[in-house]
Image 1 (cartoon, rainbow, N blue to C red):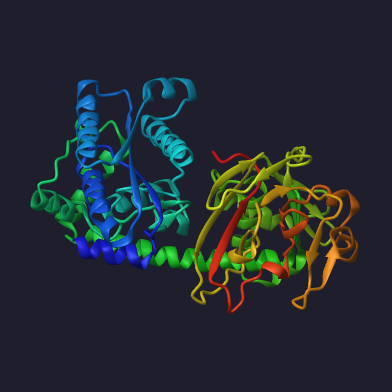
Image 2 (image 1 turned 90 degrees about the vertical axis):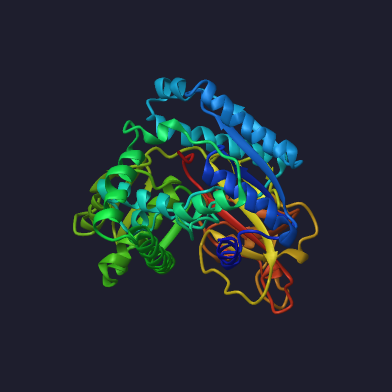
Length: 461
């Protein structure tokens, strides 16, 4: 199992020298096996590990024994361990969440806190192929597209899942072989929780009565769905780049997109909604159909959409915008971009990472950009325009004042102060939604890449 997991880690570039890994450790078998392997693989990679244990305030003495196991295991091996005490029942009562949702949210909050305080850059979780199968079935039962079928990704939003290549029974065998201590959560056997019901009454039934390889087959299907979803998302980005005009708080999509296949248009609309609202929750196929039908209506017609957005029919296309135009929160403010790291600026999120350049294909995405890291000499700032700003617009070194660039590109005056910039003092690296500077582009001589991802809009829920 060790080499299988190690090959999976290498395939997805999960662990690299210098990483600071925050590991979610409950004390159960899956997470204890994960911690065991993370500590073992340290010798190969040279990263650091900090365990995070969350006591949910549900199981009394049983939860305390879980906590004791994790803290002692870490102390015996000189591993940093952070313990959080919270109350899932209180969160359920206060916010109306289910217990499962409350536990998940509180754990993520704990991981985020340790990431900031410990200066970590990745969160390692012990989800395996059985968890993937349960996730897929849960999503299918509620109705979903390819994203729901693909389930969890090996690497996703700063989280790594090294066990998505193995089944639970492989972990159980490994725990016995290596004599790794762990505890069993008594709530795993309760039908009170949806995941337990899916595992006990659906997945296990399928394995016993339909196909013993159900879980591995579903994991394979999830991988195929992930590839298809990635391709279609890329096509959605192309639709936006070709037929869309990205402005602060809104996106205009031209009637010319109607010549594209319906599925590609839908992904273009989905990308637009996600960029404007800042999140994807509650977006359904019916919402995308409403946008598509809007192209056939007269100007002025509109539909309300999730995430505080509205689609409006205008001459020559549609506009997707925030229902109530919010004040741009970055105006007259400035943030320092952490490298590497993640930061929230107003209601926008920025995420950065550094990696070696080995002639990888540069992503053609509007809100993910690569820069030659070794050309950056000073602190990077997130801000709006200022007097003296300039940007290199030709590979030969030709620069323009930002004001002149805006004039030449016919950017309306009222929009210029709203545009968000990534800058090194007066030198602009990126006009978000527009272009990047030629001065920082990747070349054949690039050694290290700074990847910057931007997600604007409403706060992620």
